Length: 125
Image 1 (cartoon, rainbow, N blue to C red):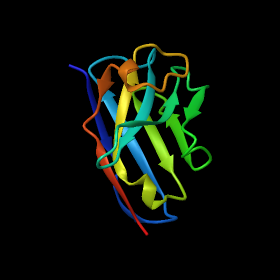
Image 2 (cartoon, rainbow, N blue to C red):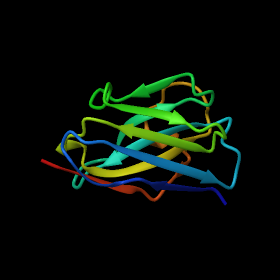
Image 3 (tube, rainbow, N blue to C red):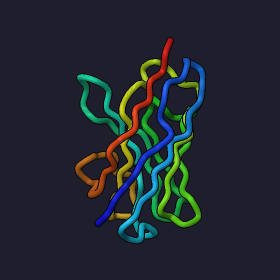
Image 4 (cartoon, helix red, strand yellow):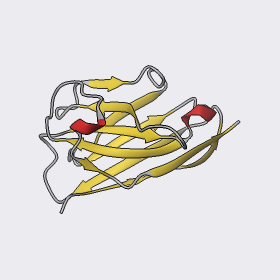
């Protein structure tokens, strides 16, 4: 059974930083791309960042580019999201996701087969 478990969320003041982690189990993720999405109250889930199976290529939404960094652990079953210069509009539940297609720049949630339960990030002004 594939599981993705996120951690690292919390409450932070605007301008602060958080580092989210996602650990996968139940399969080998070395051939998969991994990504982060977020969903704010009353809004649709939106793409945040993606990293391909090799870790060489990364993609970001316009709203986080330059502030967030996605990376993978050496074991390839872990993905991180370093979030700097946080803004109140970054407040959301953040989800880790796995795309069995390990390459490309897919930002559509329908392309990701496995999802974590989410971790809350709240940025106060």
